[in-house]
Length: 365
Ligand SMILES: Nc1nc2c(c(=O)[nH]1)N[C@H]1C(S)=C(S)[C@@H](COP(=O)(O)O)O[C@H]1N2
Ligand SMILES: [Mo]
Image (cartoon, rainbow, N blue to C red; front, side, top):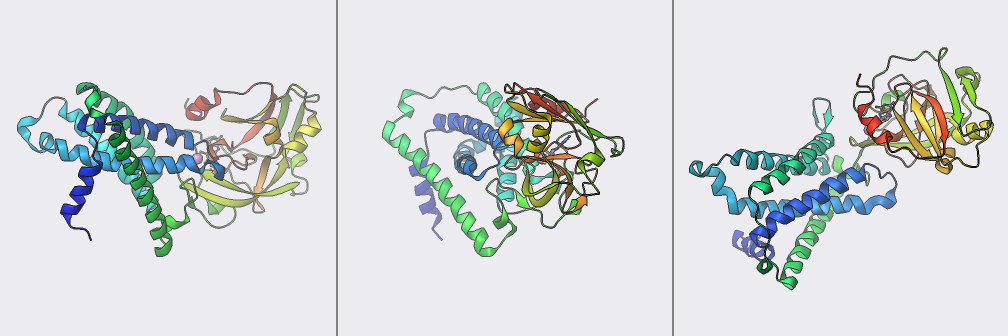
């Protein structure tokens, strides 16, 4: 191990001036919030740089927060220096440490739950409250960085060293997780942990916020196909599932943003076959999948053709919790886009920005 004095030398060499530390903490928390939220939409491995950015910047924040705490710790430990704004500072610190600690614990493979929440969801929660807190905190102690805070070459080198350090630490952690075969080693590039096994029982039932319909009787249910089509369709369960057999089958990976993934064999009707049966207009651009609850998501027509409306998983009928009688299987998309309890397929000329809001509020009466 290095002696502590050596460590202090390194810290001195990479520590930016105080005002810059404060402003870069704000900026980097912004980067984390943006990259974290954006990462929710990434489901294919080509999106890995976004996740790496998030991890490296997160570790850089650990170093900057260390510098900051070393500088201001007396304001917290010395009672006589407490001010009305100290409570805000402490709240900001708690949110920051909470977000960092849950993020790091997740990477190390810890699979604990707080109430119904996975650690990853708690991480997201801390991160979301941190953004307004840090903005308010900085507003109470407003000091713009000054010219003399920037020595162009030296400042750039310091930040480069901090970011590089973050990358090295993250990579070292990956190697250590692999060698020690910790649960952290099985994470996907999205950070999600595997759920093994086949069928309904193998993976958790997850609803985004409040969606929770009553079980649906397949005999009463039907699937409507409408919008920009030549022949609108209405299909009963028996027309989709003939003699207990659904027509198409494919393997696909479901990756939930709360931090787990599973690979299953899904059976059902290929959306392309459905669209061919209805005859799609020239003008069509998107296909919208709508749940009995109103929850919905749209895919571009070409991508939608390749998706599946599944009635079965690993030869079992889809259970109610997993979206039975029919759910969308959208390979390469994150779990929240795999609409459950589908009752309507709408072929449309336009995309549907309101779907973002609908997924959040669907189920609230
Ligand atoms: N109608 C509806 N579909 C939904 C959801 C929902 O809340 N309502 N949750 C989504 C989320 S966040 C995920 S990860 C998957 C989870 O599918 P599962 O419950 O079968 O694991 O369904 C998606 N489809
Ligand atoms: Mo999810």
